[in-house]
Length: 294
Ligand SMILES: C[S@@+](CC[C@H](N)C(=O)[O-])C[C@H]1O[C@@H](n2cnc3c(N)ncnc32)[C@H](O)[C@@H]1O
Image (cartoon, rainbow, N blue to C red):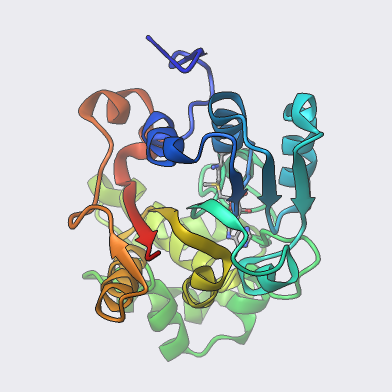
């Protein structure tokens, strides 16, 4: 199957890409920003299908920007790259300048597969930094957090049974945690065997959210977005867990009440069964779109 000349069999198909392009299609030739360029997947679809006059590509991870820059080199005349995080996007391009802005939250496959500590499947240093130059790391979080703080962190991707016991085990053994494998061992011992993988991915997701202040970044981004869009422009955001999706939903309801923007769909949009089967990462995706008032 092909969409806008792009095969859906392509190796890295970004989450709900045809849908994102369709939502932006009324701005063919317009000005866009991809605030999470990652491997350049969505940006490539936007560039190829919508022929923008300008695309701002943002990522807090310098290695992602390098990768995307080389992947999208055919489009260098209309792209500009920004090594900044959401809380710094005011530095970018001025006010009310975009027709469409996309944010595809979380981490990229490249980050997951790296040796930077994002995955419980690779033994890596206690890093987890999206931006290599930031100070906070998994190591500093583990060594500086109290037991209460660890409980709070482990609830960041949703509170569940066993959170306290895992936090206590990590707290008591933290001096012995030198690599991600040591952390995995502690969590495995506290989990029921059949749900160990789920538990491990939640623990790693929670620490990643804390190390990179992802909730603070998201909240800050939602404050800035209305100042960046032209009247009638659209903002699309894809999140990967319910805590983030609730923050997005509540902000969009607030925008609607204040007549700043309308929710394009009242309900969250999820990928098709077919996409979920093909692309494991898409399974937890929640897409929301707001259209700014004219
Ligand atoms: C899910 S990936 C994006 C994948 C991309 N849409 C693609 O198709 O290749 C998320 C990216 O957002 C970046 N990111 C996460 N939080 C960020 C923030 N607060 N500011 C800037 N970039 C951020 C990550 O470094 C990562 O590269």
